[in-house]
Image 1 (cartoon, rainbow, N blue to C red):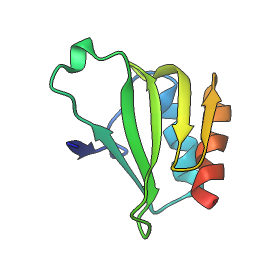
Image 2: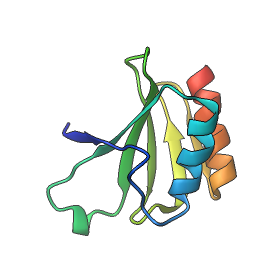
Image 3: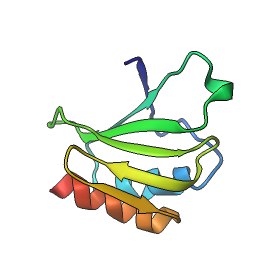
Image 4: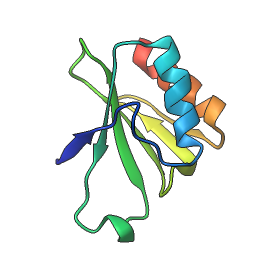
Length: 98
């Protein structure tokens, strides 16, 4: 899987930016990576991998292109669907703390 770091300098211009802002405010050592696809303009979903710096196991957050809902947050054991940024941020925080 080819990923690139997604730092505070990056933005989608969509609701996903609010999710990342909420989670970064509560988890300072957060690491976010964006899955790079060869035909990114044709992709139906964007994938991001989120983890705490000390944990090698990431969560996956999927959204529509441009950081648009719906959002799906999952790990090895759980999958949570969310339609708004607040619910998606809470799902990320819940699975990070699991």
